[in-house]
Length: 593
Image (tube, rainbow, N blue to C red):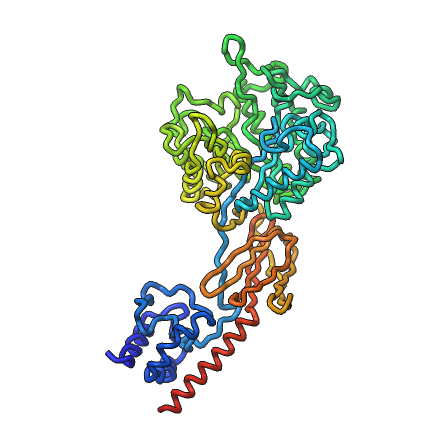
């Protein structure tokens, strides 16, 4: 078969099956007559792949019906620059790929100095250096959120008019950092510089932890309102049954929502306390007789257990409503115990399993099904292979309860990795759990407990994460039930930064507040994606093979707008020179006839 026959067969195949960039456009007969002379110039035709492959735009991936063996003389690569598709690639002809969407968070616990600060009483510089190291590590691992504990014991790791400075920060309750700074304001600013969300984590009821050693400050609630605080085992605990406690907790949290540019409010699994034991190893009853009798005297008829659950339900609902009426983009999330109650799912035995529904009075399924949270992070702290509490089995059960379509971002027990104990996990267990989450429709993220193993790279976990599961940057999944307004395209411009660099600059347009920028560069068929903070509005490009740059805005609700796309001058020049060369080849072929 001669080259003319090969070309003819290829041309007819495209007439019948052509799609995308290989579709024969307009007058097919004219196109055939225009390109047919090339069939008579095998020496020129055979040189095309080598002369143009590195200097011209490559087509998008062809459909399966158009893919040809590599040794074919008429492969798509040479045909495209030769003019089979005469339409020039403009900024309207390409669509950048959508970035990955996945919540990649980590808890940073301050209680008992688990994560930060590493110990109480560090200097301001030391505290800030440690926090910056945490945020840098989070960014390097391509995490996109940090959940910072700011109220471990009715105290504060920020300037508060309600509660004293935390002893876990300065070593003495009520003592501010010296030199003074506001750790939460600092954390928010530094997180946002790195494109990280900062969620403020509150303990709603715990008033004193067993590892607290400082003298209690005069403005601590146990001193100012002792009637609201109960001694329970080794703890001090606010009584959830007192409406004044609900009001106080909401005031504390909303003070932070109002004054700080946080991205989320987070509550963990401590509602009514985990049971404490007496000397005979029996569960102690929580001492809420006063508030219980008040409820009965007011005409309440619910059982004591149902009343306790409703106290917690009311707090969750009120918090959600207050946050949304103030700053609707601030997400509200809860990380309850991983099992709603024994028997759900049915693999969870009722005899030995802990019952958070009956002992913590946490009806976490109700919060999810009523839409009182934007995300739920059930603490699924069990291995995949564990028979009863298998990670994928529990994950699937929680997804089935998500009738409101909220986010399910399970907590995973990364701190189990690399421990010097018989219960230590291999780092691969965490990798497999993340892959399990990624493979479940309806679940789009995880939260690591905690940041410490990621800082210490226990078991090589920090090496594996970016290699195996976090290899590309990801946007936090959007929350369209809060707001789905698209941001406007930015204004995009090009300037010469130097003889060898171009400066791509952009500015926001429209009224929607920009939270992040998605900046994508195209080289051939490959797109490279960066996710940049709102404050960064330019990049420099020194790679002269980059063809196009696309920039789009992302709102505080996670909604990504359309891309503004610009074709780079060097690529335009290459295309122009290719057009001249192509016309010369066609002209020469006509003369040779």
